[in-house]
Amino acid sequence: MSRGTGVSDTKVLNRWVIVAAGIVIQLCLGTLYAFSVFRNPLIEQFGWTITETSLAFTICLVFFTITMVFAGFWQDKVGPRLVGSVGGILLGLGCLLASQTNSLMTLYLAYGVIAGSGVGFAYVTPIATIVKWFPDKRGLMTGVAVFGFGAGSLVFAPLAARLIANYGVLNAFAILGVVFLIAVTGSAQLLRNPPEGWRPPAWDSPEPNLKVTFRKYEDYSPGEMLQTMRFWIVWAMYLIGAAAGLMIISQAGPMAEEMAGLTQAAAAAAVGILAVFNGLGRIFWGAMSDRIGRNLSLMLMFAVYAVDLFLVLPRATSYMWYVFGICTAALSFGGYLALMPAITADYFGTKNYGINYGWMFTAYGAAAVFGPVLIAQIKEVSGGYTQALYIFAVLSLIGIVLTYLNKLVGNRQPPGRLTVDPSS
Image 1 (cartoon, rainbow, N blue to C red):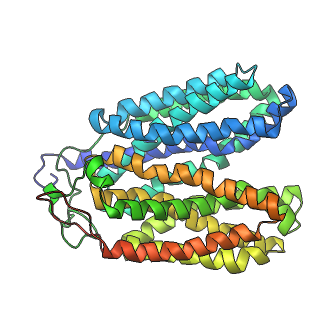
Image 2 (image 1 turned 90 degrees about the horizontal axis):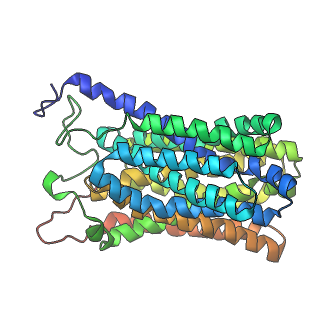
Image 3 (image 1 turned 180 degrees about the vertical axis):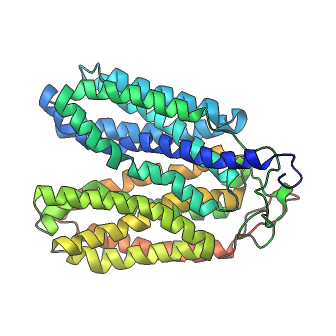
């Protein structure tokens, strides 16, 4: 029996089934990053411009971020199964409707609004559920959960390309829509929260890496969380860390051709390697943060960014040097996607985790605009990418300062609440 909860060890083993279901869901959602596979075939079939076609991806990201807040709030009320199922239905329906595309507005509505909303609803469910089932391995397991999202394009981009070649771009949307509808909705049926007060067997510490823990005081409402200075410091760190990575991901192919003189095929291979390190970074830094603490891990990640963006990538004139530079950045970028879900639970509890992390994730949404737009504008003005890399090297140093400040400030406590500080 698990400690004092009346929950059998057999039920405890189900948490690994939940991990498997979460990875399947995240792999499907990670297809979001494979939209570039659809871009050129859509342009060839309908004669749209690159900007017009790419706007569907931007709309998808925006609705992904916005709906996560609502999905998180709803999940806290009804649990992950229903919310994840709705996400799978919306994602599948969006892709099926995209297969009927005959205008840009249809594509924007189907892929951008509906499918993007489906990603937002489904994305939060496995993360929030796994956080509650794995308080003993919170950093590692959130890293595993979001690894699937980072690696999804590795699985579905080649599949989508083959489907497009064999059946056409619209039929590829339809086939993938059916796959997502079945896989995401089916996997969501395995998700459930642990019983109230459940703890892993033989686990003595109720919260890892916490100096002081009073369980009844640890859960913050969204309003309480948004009143803390700590939330905004962590939000700013998330913005910087995510924007730096998304900046590089958005321009990795053109940068390879222009800075390192790579062929289009070599640049595509480099981007594929980047995706691998993006996924591995989520597991590596998630596990590392469980061992050395979240704040020290964040400091190291910002330090890696600073060195890479100031000394390595601006001097990347060969294939190996360029791959080393972008993969180093991708490794750190992946870490933010693993640590920030864990940090949200560390600081603000798990009772309202769905909506709380939804608010925290708005930093990623802001980063998705800030990083790619900044480097694109600097490229247009200066003709190169170096200035943007230097700007984010400086911002990474600011991130180190913010991490240090995060160690010093406490949560602004509502009356009767005690401070809970994760150790560094």
